[in-house]
Length: 174
Image 1: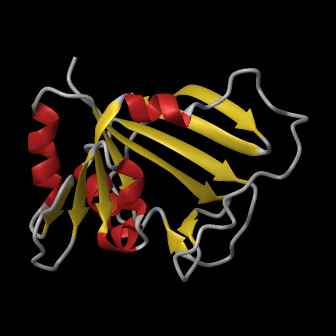
Image 2 (image 1 turned 90 degrees about the vertical axis):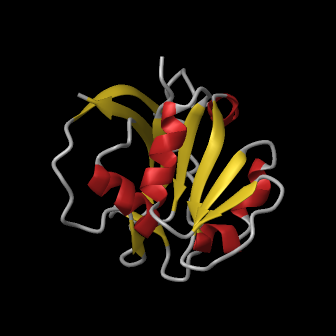
Image 3 (image 1 turned 180 degrees about the vertical axis):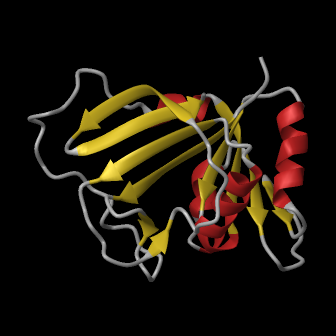
C-alpha cells in the first residue's frame, strides 16, 4: 500500500485556519461533553503513522517544526535556506517534491499548513485524506483554508468524532 498525503487541521465554522495575525488560541472546544462520541480522535496515533510533515514558512517561523523532531519536515519557502537536522527547505515546486516522496517507501505524509501551501496541494488534487476538526467558533475574518478556484473533489466520510463540541471528520477521495 502506498503512502498517503493527509491534510490534518482545524478550521473555524466559517472556514478559517488561523486568525488574521496567525494565532490559534481560538482552537478549543465548547466545554460540553454532552454530544461526545464514544470513540475519540487520537492525534498521537496519527503521528505514529507519518514520517514526513509539510508546512509553510509562516508555520516554521512559529516553531511548529519543533513538535516534529522525529520526522522529516519539509518547509515551503521562497527563500534560499540551508537544510539542517530534520528540516528540508524547498524553494521550488513543493508539490513535485512531495509527490516524489509519496512514491518512496514510508509512512504517510502530514500536510500541516498554512493556507497557500495547502492550496497548491488542493489545486493539484493530490490530497488522499482530509482530517478536519471543526471548531465551534465563527472567526469572521482570518486566514481561509480554501482560497478559491479549486477543482471539484468528491469525498466520502470515513469517520467522525465529536469531542468537547469539536466535530472531527475524516474524508477520503471517492
